[in-house]
Image 1 (cartoon, one colour):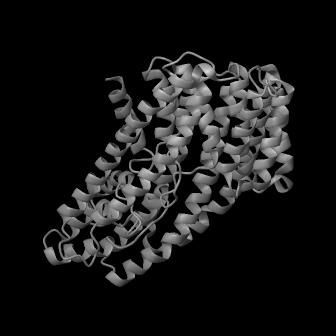
Image 2 (spheres, one colour; image 1 turned 180 degrees about the horizontal axis):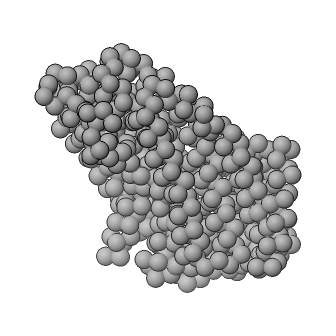
Image 3 (cartoon, rainbow over the protein chains, first blue to last red; image 1 turned 30 degrees about the vertical axis):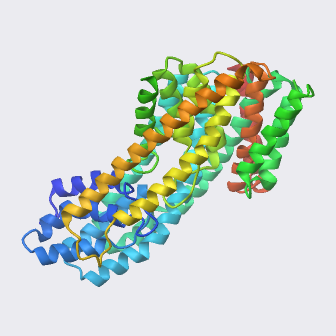
Length: 250
Length: 219
């Protein structure tokens, strides 16, 4: 670790990264949050020179947005660049270059696969009668094991690699991990449909008509729901509720 | 007084949605269980959490996205359902929660616009270390207050609606849950589309389905 970066400033920056979206807005997105997370290190590096501190603070206030769990990668790399005395323009260009890939990768890896896969596994556990508190604890522990591992890995990699984080990302093969997670999530989805149909409290036991309606709603979601999911779900529920008030569905 | 406690809980859980950490305490499954436990009915909270989690499977807390606020929606739904022990309370409370989730989503968007006025830009002459820190922490506090207000108002209105309509609900308990699950099936279908679609993923989907059906029979 180079002299400007002490263990305490690095830990402080990492902990502050958990608040990076606190002031999220449509103008600078997480710009203020990024500067807030950089502050302890910037004060340590430029504390004796108010003008340098002011300039460094301003360059990290600019518009910035990445996936929050991978924000540590950008933060660690920016800390490394600042500690190495990299010129301001290079730091700014580096941040602009990584924000798109880190945003897209994080969304695909976490929001579109890791989170729904574990949500569906937890829901399936509930349907088969696992005690409620155990289902919730299982979900939280497993989800956050992956979440925190990604944050720690990202921050350490950024701090170690600096401008070379792109190569580190390629070596980590996150795209391949995303594909495997998509496959796992698909199995979880099938599992959830299976237990929601066949468990003792499932739709088949409520009545075969309910099971058929459930499968129909599933197909409707698959075919057209991605365009208008909320209105579709509301329309399905409303139609069945109206049918039930007429006694057609009981 | 109970509404105030529920509001404080809603505010704390809402912070987890995007502002602080994102440890997923804010997901309906977890928020529902915690609210149910606080109100003395873990089972009810978990049932509502399961239903709303299914609806929200395709709703991600992505920073830039505009999404319904599933956290306050869940707290509101559990608080509303807990007032009347009848079959109609569950579906009506879930409906109230889903509607209130849209209001919560609007409040998130409004707060983000307000944040946009508070945060300094790099060209701003008044930028100081102190101001950056103050704005960051104030925004987190505002998000907490947003969660409290949205939850208190939503839970109050939700309880009124459920109390007034629960007795005239036409379905028994099991079909009521069935109705909600059918609505959730739309979200599950959408998720399969997002994961690559049935044609591309049919082998894995069918394998999971078989595993689920067999597991449900034996567990």
